Image (cartoon, rainbow, N blue to C red; front, side):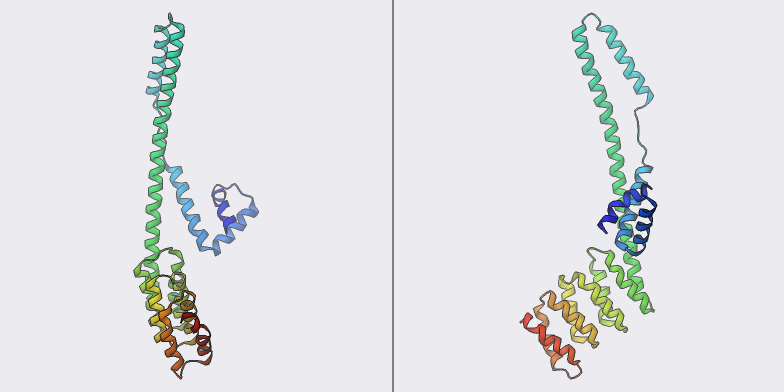
Length: 254
């Protein structure tokens, strides 16, 4: 993936070979992370192309040349002093022009960067709205699709975490609950997620989901999970392989 991201800028500029273009196109169809970076680069390139670079006016250039000519005529009798003053003023004029040009370009680039950040924030808001909407869909496959959208968020807020936790607690489809556990596992170090896993362990009846929750609680060393695990051991309906897993990992939490 790192090799692909290094080529995205040249891919957008059509600087790659046909073979490289085909490789990147195929990869982008399958990799959501690279798709996101590709979209951000496209937006940035578009912003750079759209920016208007303000150049010094012709009037300013004429005045500058006229001032230089007058300076040469006035100081012909004092050649050495004139040359020194002349070059100083040329340097000052060039520095002024370069400074004005650079400031204008910096302002345009900063605005383009600000616009890109705003666009990224809007994209994240749209993704969050889409995810929450999909989680409430009647189709189990759509709800799974909504759960999987959490991979787009590096730091999900409480609303997203709560929505996923509700799927883990309440969804009537085992695959949706299991997918929610897997999605939340990326943020298991969060106290909110840790508490949700412990609560789900006390209510979950499906063995596959129970095992997934137990594995995550052991991985993050959630010692408060020891008690609900003991209660599962006491229940007759708890599957033997689940009890065996609890007996294997429980000493790690005590």
